[in-house]
Length: 176
Image (tube, rainbow, N blue to C red):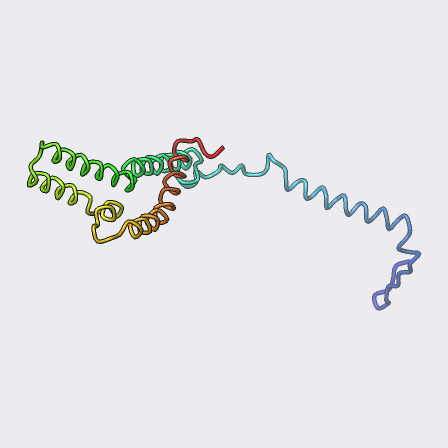
């Protein structure tokens, strides 16, 4: 019996649990599901063509660019390591040259003036080498020279370590 226009509709708990209400709810769910599926119809949908995007979003381009930059850095590091000489080795070479000139003067192959001129030239070449300037500094005692050399060795230790690490990484050997 339909309700009159001014009457309130009352629904009991028992009315909600009837088979008729369950069927009506299932029908409404099925209709809603069918509407959603019809909206997702692949034939009706407009197929979007992906945009070309940025030049930098291309994986091949980015990998090639960073590979080139990595190679450039490795080459530059290798060249920098090749030109770095160990100042202690350079100082020993210069001191050996001074010793040979002194020996040649003692044997009479050089006059004292020639020997002094040659030694002065070697000292000028080694003036930027702290090891060499320490070795030839006549105002320092042997113990002071040893202390100064030890101080220089501690300073060079880190430079040599970094150079060895970079050289090892550049060659691909690593530490293993």
